Amino acid sequence: MSERDIDWGDLMRAAIGGDTAAYNRLLTSLAPAIRAVARRGLGRAGLAAEEAEDVVQETLLAIHLKRHTWDPSLPLGPWVRAIARNKLIDAMRRRGRRDHVPIDDVVETLASDTAEPTPIPGRLDEHLQSLPDRQQSVVRAISLDGASIRETATRLDMSEGAVRVALHRGLAALSVRFGSTKS
Amino acid sequence: MKTGDLIRALTSDLAAPGPSIETRFVVAILPGVLLAFALFAITLGPRPDLVLVAGDVRFLFKFVVTLSLALCSAILVWRLVRPGAPARLQMMALAVVPVVLVIGVLMEMVVLPPPSWGARLVGSNGLVCLLSIPLFALPMLIAEILALRQGAPTRPALTGAIAGLFAGGVAAAIYAAHCPDDSPLFVALWYSLGIMIVALLGSLAGRLALRW
Image (cartoon, rainbow over all chains, first blue to last red; front, side, top):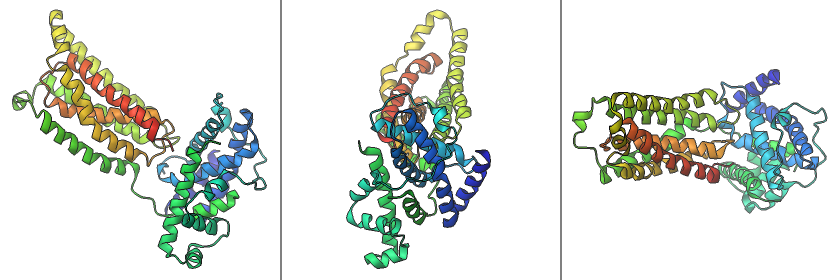
């Protein structure tokens, strides 16, 4: 994974500098790697691989909200793996599985089939429905409809600043809900 | 929701990062340190012969041990809140602190005749020490845990315990300016116990408040 780490680190550095295209590329290329880790871990614990997408989404949220905890002098890969492993273990705990998680196996790379599955309503959708109206509308407009901040502001008759705040709070609340619910 | 949709939302939420964890930690801890000094001034105050003992080796040794504990704990905590960051060096540095304390104890035992060990160990102020250190440490510990919630510790209980060692170390250094017992034997017993209480509280707080 070391070659890829260099790319990931560069992308994250660019993202921290405000490069949204680099950030989008980074998250898009991290998703399949996390998915492979999640499928493997769930499979070993005898859990359905369909739940892997919940873990992927929870991990991406954590990566986003905790990106300031990455030390730019270190490679990005171990940081991403540690977060993915943490979220995977959380997900298994919530399922009431306290099996030993074979960590070294879990973080091994990677199965070849890492395409995103056809969407089924996941936990993210449940959590989204539980958000306050305004946050929910903003998150939906930007994620599902692909609207920009400005379009969302016009559509919902809010200021762009208010849209940004609602988006950020909504995403943070989604992350908390992943952590707190039992399903 | 498809993961690609989520990524679109995350990308739109990209903003300049705030201050570093270290900065947040220091900013959060400062009022706690001031409060600890205030508590110290109200409850105990410095010992009357502070100026006379200021150059005494045993007196200074208390500050060497407690402040190096605080420093090494802070440096370790800053690693523990970063997922996947190697922390082995920082752990080894922290492990040196009790070794230094043991060396101090051994030297004391060489210098003093065995019959006086017991009196030095028990000292005159043990209970005050045991209560003061957690009392002074508590505001710092609370401030620390709140600041560390910005981090992402993969071992929340351990991270909280090390945060407790930091708060306990600073609190013990403040208390040391009052403490009339200077023997490393006393420090090894009572200071350690007081700091352990804070570390235990920190561990519990970490388990409850540092999950993410």
